[in-house]
Length: 381
Ligand code: SF4
Image (cartoon, rainbow, N blue to C red; front, side, top):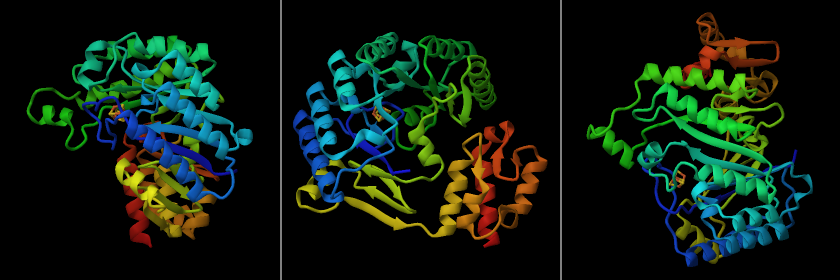
């Protein structure tokens, strides 16, 4: 399969209270200069048009761009990207920033899947998260996207919000499902270093969701989505059959993708690349004719095997053993056997002749499970 393509747009209309991603509040001139730089990055990196299997435009907030700027992005992509083999073209959308003209510009660009960062349908939680829209905005934005011709819709929701009840989460899930959404992503709120939300937590201004309630919420999400015909295929992601995010599956199975734009990461045949995160540094480097990488590193085969385990155990289908063993240089049993046996006896891990996967109980403690397996590989090597 040809490498996929990720394009990063690092601009937001304002900073959300919980966010530690690199993103900036920029002027129209900054954004125009960024699009110039993106165009030049394509020229510096690729001699010919590329033919990606999937495309994902993420951020930041891609729909922070004006309709005119989105049309320009579409023009520059059309000149450098052949869409003939592209089976999925996603754009992330912050509901509060979409307009009918922007939705039409996305369709003209080739976007066929909209990924809405809804987070919650309740105004009281949206305010606490610092999201720049109100309840009802997401509903209108989904309608706009559908009217423009984007049929495939995904939504991101956050749970374990301070003060959130199971009933409120149930209502959010029902509202999302009520939009005929074919794909849902659920993330427990995390308190990242040095964010306004974390400062409120440290100052005792808010009470985090109790761990037991968070586990109940995780279970509720799974049960409600399954009952509605959306299967969990990744620890945080649910889809109707055939509606799994093909682009993200490339990451989770350690496929190949190019990452363009400031802060973007890529991986081609085991070589990781990272583009300079600061968009001003990025535009300056490009204007000097310099490739804007902040990191380029070929992963050793064992690191590749570990990374595959790290990413692939997030999938309910698990990790393909033959792929793991091709890089690990030995069988899964020989590298992780003792630890894997212990995790199996605890009902957290299971293996088949072809795959190793986390059980539903294992998915609840996935981070520690992965750490244990990875450390057992390190001690074996
Ligand atoms: S819109 Fe997304 S990237 Fe931008 S500040 Fe909010 S959470 Fe962060």
